[in-house]
Length: 334
Image (cartoon, rainbow, N blue to C red; front, side, top):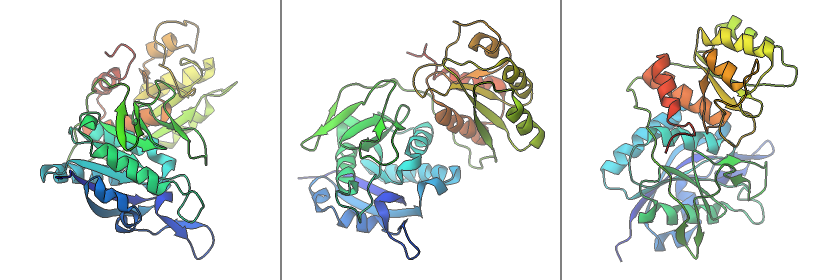
């Protein structure tokens, strides 16, 4: 049987951790070691393993993900039929979405990890790795963008969130539910998603720092004013309450910020679209959009920060272009 070629690239994380010398676990296992622990992989695909990074996911940077996306394009040109990225789960919802923004190929791309490290009973890394390869090797996964496979469930990178600190079922997609699942090693898709514009990569990305701030009860806006005074950031994402609402004091501060940098309006709820035309009081979504904020649409705050950072790094700070890029993620997108 002619099995598809699937490359596994490891970035580190819990799935690759063993006991450290000073207490706790640290990422030490190579991609080859991860593959060697799951002999069933050889029945699914012609697997190649590459240790790309050896980091906890909290240490990953945009530069790492951009370099990974470039490597995937190169490997796809060499005939690979699917890719699996293993990494720590803490930032999977951000890194997978960054890859989704940068990766413009139909070749299946799957990100997975583990909630229980290899030294624990019931470690889920091997099962997640097998499921991820089964998805990456499936023709049905072509053209779906970046997927996250955990606990035999398949999630779209644009929707998936980590909702628990330690349980194996930590990952879910509150906005729309999972795209599919695996049964007896076979991918079952319940839905497909519309395509969205990708961020066109620049060969020399610009440095860009984007702040992510929550809106809170009785927030006077002082954190935003302090951020502006520091002159250390190129953009801001505000996680507003509900459908996109803040205090009057914070609204004034955000209007000031929007005169000097792109300010994106997201919701701190983590699910549902930011509203555009329902509430009209001071600090409401109508008021904030009139003041120059950019609506995040269906993206939560962390994903909005990822997209804004990539846009600034690769396409510059043109307000019209940034607003247009976020428009693709609004609730009127087909």
